[in-house]
Amino acid sequence: MVNAKLKPYYSVALSQVLSDDGKYLFIGTNFGEILVFSVESLTIDISTTENPSDENLTIDPKIGSNTEPLEVFSATGDKSQIYSLSYFKDVLIVGTNAEITGYALKGHKIVKKSWEIRIPSTPENAEVNEINCLWLDKEAAVLYAGCGDNNVYSVSLEDGKILRTFGGHTNYIHSIDGNCKVGQIVSASEDGSIRLWDVRQKKSSAKLDPYKKDQICRPDFGKWQGSVSINNDWLICGGGPRFSLWHLRSNEVTEVFDFPEKIHISGFIDDLLMVGGDYKTVQQYDLSGKLVTELPVSSPSIYSVVWQSTPHKLLSLGGSNNVLDICTNFNYRDICLKLYQ
Image (cartoon, rainbow, N blue to C red; front, side, top):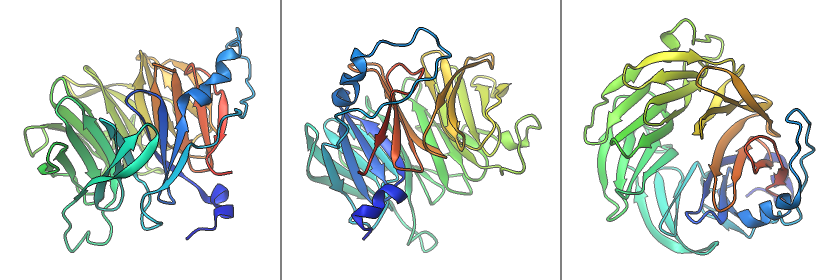
């Protein structure tokens, strides 16, 4: 058990999720705890502050007056870190070591454990099989889990059964994303590959190896892929290799970006491509490769990100220290939020 006084010095924000109504922000830490914050409280002071007219003006992030967590919930009792989070119908879904657990919520309050799903283990992964990432198809009520045993699993949230195992990667999964409209998921692995899957098939429909491209590879950083995101037409990915944009129909790379360090997060925000990792800023580019925005961050490494446009516009960035960077217009940092006081 870690001494409470030491937590501010050793905390890591590994995972985040927003409630479906946009009112609450849940943070999963390396201490096996989930911290719950009110989104309205985080933004109420900022909403009265006039935005700067000069886009190059340096903003001093302020510590909001309502930054105490509403709740600190111990999900694992120090037995496992909170590797991943998701949210479905007033149930907080928590990925730990070989387990996916659903907790019933009443508002922000975590009431009780509703269900638990154990990922199958083999002698090779019996001790460690982290649920590294989750992606939820809300329409189908199916959860996809990328795990430390090199597999992606689809799980029915109606009965808790594992529907399918997507095998093919030769090392653990860092990141998954999906497009429920076309029944497609993508996975990024330590093995250096990106795999695309039809959710009805166990074998991948396509495989990308960014590290084999001369304009993308960075041998000093390794071949691993730390993050992948897709929309209807495009795929973005990066890790050891450079951040790159791929056309989904042709599976060809169309743009390589100048983000200088290792990559752990990515995403599509409006018409921009977001990337972050072991660097002092999170960057946003357009499809042509032009750098549009740089957001300064407090953590040496950014590991988790969530955002929403309604009811309160919010972007939350967390990583390898005790501070979350909160942005309310996606262009500059408003609050540096301490997790543990």
